[in-house]
Length: 74
Length: 409
Image (tube, rainbow over all chains, first blue to last red; front, side, top):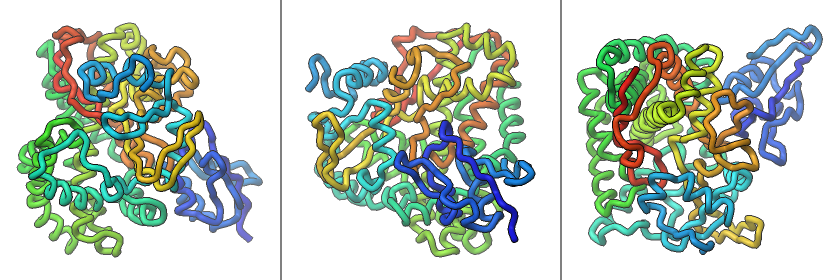
């Protein structure tokens, strides 16, 4: 069983580039303001979600271990 | 037309002071039909972001979808050439929408992520120091020609691994193409000749790197052909796009920033007190205050209700004005003040939405290294010319100083 992740999008930073959705389409979507939102924190494998966060051009996405609070990205 | 606001986007005062011209338009009519150039001009922050984030209404396939004749007009005999240029422009990954844009952008996107770009910081720092070592004793420089352009061009040419002995020649070709969105009647011919010359130069290098790709940025673009996302023409068009866009905007960031600091010496003094802690916000503020790109064009795919009783028609040109949105008082307090501690600073100098600037992280990195080192070495800058005599490229899109002579202290 994969560990649970807590994924946060900083709405002051997100520019709606949608790269997160490109890399992890089951995890991220775009909301009405065309900014990223987490539709399912377990939508894709952990490495895919980290890859999506790494590919955000403005580093708006934080990924943590939901249980321990360990920051996995950035 | 709103009272007292003319439609001549190339008038000397609109080129010299886009903030005054577009600012007046923003307060009177933030979505305005410019009859002279046959395009919608969007100047409020809110409408700009909305437009940029609705690519399904506002297409980036501008070269292929713009069915209107060139404006300002070009000679009849250049119309065939204009058709060829449109096809060539359409081969850029940026000139795509939706799933096609994602597929084509993804080829190069990974190269430009914040994490990947950070590995180039030492090279940028070394290049900044080498250039300033040579300039520091002189007591003056032309910021554009002596510092900004050599820095940004040598970085992008280095990332693309253009052979050093060819770089001066390639730079000259790139410079010949800068009038594309200007008003010179021969601009399409100049541009087409530039494209042909750079393409002729790049073609054998590209052929070699498709056969045997390395780690450089040009090889990454060539991988697009290897994986089936780009044709050879697209490889060449994207290589030229990244070569030109990779330096001709960042040199504006650096020149416009030095000009801003020359005119706001208290802000440069503040930066000098602690460059390391101020530099990130300072570069964002310079980007906001005098953005390298003034505006971006799209083509409407449907009739779109823009609010305020304004309806953009299908196939209409829509140009959104970054320079105006970045000074919108609805979003920025004291928008006409340069304040290097401004935070948050949600400027739109890199655009917004799915077409957000690919090279934003590289531009930021170069800006941070350049201004931090300028602040460590110099007490300030004084313009060697009357500010009213500063000349800008006559362009709707680019905010480009032709020269920036300053005395350094």
